[in-house]
Length: 639
Image 1 (tube, rainbow, N blue to C red):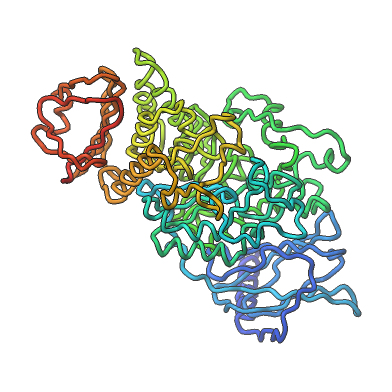
Image 2 (image 1 turned 30 degrees about the vertical axis):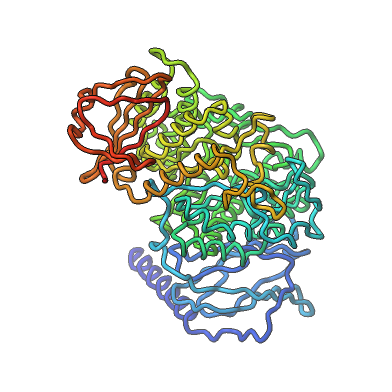
């Protein structure tokens, strides 16, 4: 009898749920004759049909909105649950959007009593393409990293915006805004394409309404707004579209760990645990910064105190630490990432300060994105020189604690340092080129070495030309090596013209120097070559040749990697695939040296002619090879 009753209940629930779904499909939707915007803020600003996850959670911000009862009358959309926050000025609405839901506008009614009702028009859009069509970046790409405020000022009318706290432009101040913007990047897409880059990663372009140093973009005060000093959302979309037309993908720099202290919600936080150390913040008590002990994420012996100080400490005093353990904050961050992927047709996300947020959340965040976009790419910043830590964060790695990050790519700070040390050190048994050789040998630790991002420098460290003490041959060696490795290479804007920070090594404002030619009154123009020194022109042409060769080289992009231990101040690395072999020869000898090529006979190049990728000269691979000067030689069997 009990079984029959249980079965009847299941049938009743199933029929009821089916009827509910049918009702949602067939009910008549309210007509929206005029768009209403009675609510102060609702995020995400709109959503789409066609996701695997049919739920979206709306953050609603308005004075005393918790007293209202929300309702929707739109076929295929229903309010599943209403959540009140600790602040009376927030509601969180769980919407369910059926697969059959048609795109369109509908009103959300917020009824307070018989006399008062607020109405907010919301939109459900059709997705422009299915999730499988979103193609991420990989080892076939070369990424151009840009600090937008310092690249090019294409629209001087947006340099200063009333209503924002920082209102000055001063190119003489390394920490002030200089005026670079989205229009400046759009205007120079031809240059980026001609150089041979296939992806653009821009430092954040969202609003940073901070009192000072807002140019860098990492103290966001609105996660859904393009900073008007960079341009508009439409211009951001234009950049994505025009870049795509040139075969260039767009990677968005996102921050899940923190926001800016002037973020709009810091004046009225939804929950008592929306940010870490919230009680201290609200009572003007001292705040602890992160201890930055990132190894506490993996350390078998880490104390609870160290783990807590790492995860819950603020990155800096002006960047409140978000509490991703709050489920509403977690939903907010995940949905924000998906919203931007759809809005900009992104090819990837670079996630800032990856080890700092709650690591369980970061796994869920990456997992939610990769579930919706299986061919997408995410790279996480783990600033560590320890390959074990880099390996830990890459998806597919077998961690002892069972942790799976769902993260496709991590950043190879370890190899970056190995390259610099190898080229700055004298050649001995345990110094010099052996650092590069043994660094690459660590690839056995990685789940997928080719999906790791390698770089000579970035916006947070000294320029590679500075790190290598102004040595042009060594700079060419470093760039050639990382562009030949089984990796995803990223170069920082200006590397191609030997930009440096010799005046104040390591100074962030100076590292992020203006790209010459990006401003109308510049006397030097790196886009056209006007005013560049011979050394700058030579480096620019050198990189252009390597990058463009790489675009069509199956050996570099997909081939097997074979390298030989350093020998007589040289280091040979080969990338091999059927029909093509690429040879990288690094030579640290100041005087001419002759190398016995029989040492490398297993590669099978004996007697073959090879083409010098830079000069076009044909080189015979016979019994020996004389290297006349210190530097790098890039050869290919493609003639």
